[in-house]
Length: 212
Image (cartoon, rainbow, N blue to C red; front, side, top):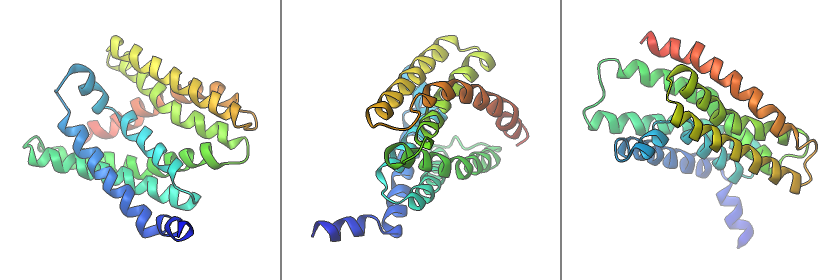
């Protein structure tokens, strides 16, 4: 019975349906929590929130290809959930369609990477586990830099920087305890990746959003 249950859980339709359903709920919830408190407003209006959950979903999926596809499914569904809630809440403005398209494209590009990263941290066998851990922490650290250097929201930047450092430490510690090859690469690469993410977000994503 346990083998049958595990087999059904790992079926592509089951995995993709579950990740899409969770993505819809996540997108809807992040929109609904806007403006409730300053802390929740910042946390829910953050790409890091979506990405951390996508990596967590990847870690829960047994098969690597399904983790990759599940990441794409979840990120796209999160965008759909968020902008559907926005439309129903009458905050979907004239430029909303273009913005939704940009974020959906970003989700389709980043979702598979984060799904792979979550799977690799938990189930990988080479030094890529450390690289995958750095990928996850990179997003939080990069967003901290963007909040501080681009938006000048220094208090929020400090909070995200602390969260990114904590995630990096926790992932590095987990990989060390698991005996991962070159586990220390996670701590080394995460800050470098964070700066690269900041440059990409500022130079590419902001440019695309400004053109729609």
